[in-house]
Amino acid sequence: MRWFVSFLLTLTLWASPAFSQEAVRFATVEWQPYAGEYLPEHGIGSAIIAEACKRAGIEATFHFLPWKRAMAEVATGKYDALYSAYDSKSRRETYAMSKPYLHGQMVLCARKDKEIHWDGTVDSLRPYSLGVVLGYVNTPAIDKAHFLQKDTAPSDLLNLTKLLKGRLDLVVIDLYQAIYLLKNSPVLMGGVSDVKFLSPALEKKGIHVMFSKANPGWEDLLERFNKGLEQIEEDGTKDAVMAKLGFIDDTELE
Image (spheres, rainbow, N blue to C red):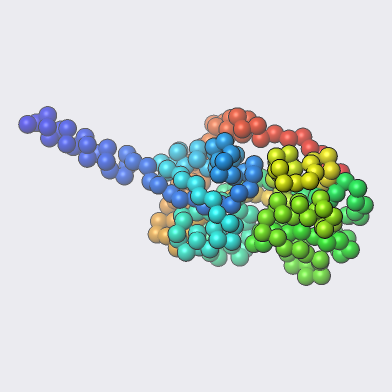
């Protein structure tokens, strides 16, 4: 009988929260190479998040939605967290922002044959039509500049399509996202050799997870995720994941 009681106690301990992983639902948009439903490991950002979650005792599941819907459903608590997100003051009012798990370079992309006079100031963009994505955070200067000729689209892919067809002069886009789409999208009538990325870059931006404040326990999830992220950065796991997925590009800005 004593061995049976011991066996039951062992089962109870293994079934307790301390020995089981907590399931957390992460929502995002298709944003290759950072996140994609059909990418290896769902993209480099998803792979890093999954490793950080393992260290924190979290089982991460990934769900792909249109960006505005993903933001809304995380805000209401249907999903626990949103990722592939840039930081902003307004977003912090609704979501709890993690430490950045990656950094992206936001740039201006133009057709190779288009002469653009860009001196790093928003005012120099006055003459040009500028493609931006609905719901995205760009730079504060661009987002506040109501005098700019902004053309809003639901995706970076559509903006690049318009650019290559000559319907836009410039698009605001993450450098790695642009390169991925130009190399891999079958619907684009052009590739990397048909565009140029303008220097100076607009901004180097941290890419974050935003946890829903609508769900109880978000403070604990945020703390655990940040600690897991720190651990994989310190022990080299993050670098190994990035190398495995080939997240290296030497593209120069013009």
